Amino acid sequence: MILDADYAAGYLAAIGNAVLKSEHIQKCLPKKYEEYTRLYSVISVDKRGLDGMRTVAISNFSRAKEMVTNNEMDISEGGSNGLCIIEAVMMDIPYGGFLNETYWYLYKGDGKYVPIECPKQYAGLCSFGVG
Image (cartoon, rainbow, N blue to C red; front, side, top):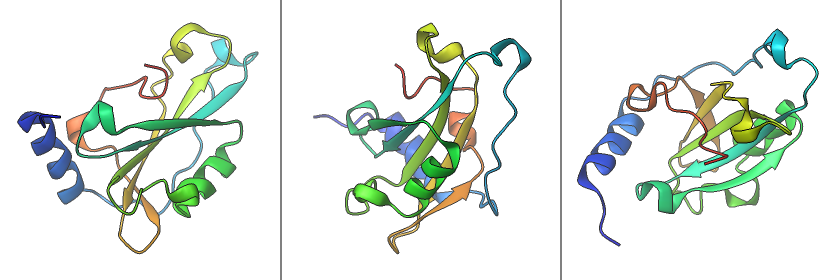
């Protein structure tokens, strides 16, 4: 596969300029979606971009955070997936309802991910987990 130079540069800048956060707090659900169930897609991203993503869906935000923070099931794939995203999506709504609710993590190389601010290179992007 040929690596897209622009994507690779953005990915490396996102990792190099990551702004750490103490923790991610679950956002409130918009009123118009209160009757729906929210799921959390856990997406790992490597330097290959879309070809380097994998997604699992979790029904509980706390569990999704625990899974990512502890690098369960080797989400980092030996450290090659430097970024991980938890994205809220709505069950039973096409394309997840566009909540634009993401929680970003950086792999620190010690077997753990730490919370970070959304990298500016990815600001405004959504639907990582649902395509």
